[in-house]
Image 1 (spheres, helix red, strand yellow):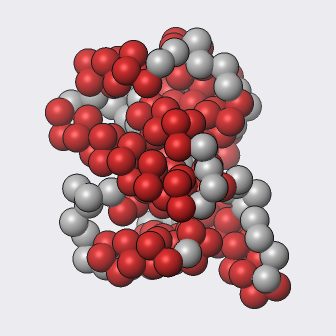
Image 2: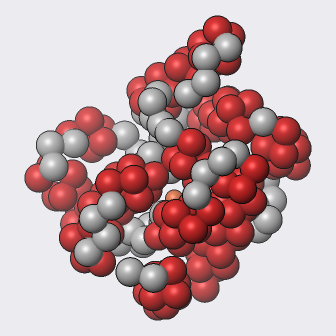
Length: 191
Ligand SMILES: [Fe+2]
Ligand SMILES: [Fe+2]
């Protein structure tokens, strides 16, 4: 599938505001990819499809999560489902079988301890694309300009703090990802 075809599908699938957000993620992902040695077109393609399932019926996604054995997801915020289940739907419905794209979509909300550079690019781009306006986003953009690993850590820290303030449960993978990246940073190993 070409990027233009994915664009057409996303334009038809998502509400206008979410489509605009998606285009912002595509643009930011391109910039981060160029700066961090990630294939720009792959990043643009994953970014275009990352929120494919954002507005899908929750029961449908819960059913699919059960079918895939991803039962832990069902105990946490429904908001989490659109990433891993979206990756599966992109594969099943759009025929995108590339595991690299699958993973980048699946990891875009929680992150993953071993996520490769492409996934890091999509994860950070989703948080800092130009249409994002939450307090602290400017700082995250500055960090992302300087260092991708630092941006992953700062984005996770921001998310965890936000969830703590709301006293919302935190998906364990998000904490595991934070720990993995902070540890790697401290040891000087690159993830
Ligand atoms: Fe998303
Ligand atoms: Fe998004």
